[in-house]
Length: 158
Image (cartoon, rainbow, N blue to C red; front, side, top):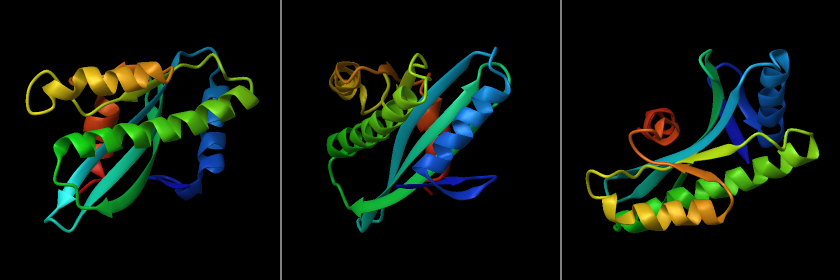
């Protein structure tokens, strides 16, 4: 599983994780949020571009992020796309959680940012995908607070 970094290029998940921990270790007294979010963009009935972002946010003092882009067959259903976005975020969160536990950073909470909100077509899906995330042991954020999906990941779906 490879990720892109705007400043470091292509990295494996292990390399991205090492960069995340180095960023936290450089200022260990600061507060951090580890955010994972996925967004998607259909491409003219050919396929769908899914982008999953990992963001390490030094609260009030900037962030670093890494993203993974992949294409899947075209999905007509918005429900199916949102479920798949949630699945991709949970997949990465599970892998990152295992690495955190191995390296003494297990108290760092992971937020999953979902591309659903009270306004628009996705409002009927909120309970379902938030339940999936909470049931998996992570904190869920929806619009307008889900910038990991709606800003960072969205930027790379085009």
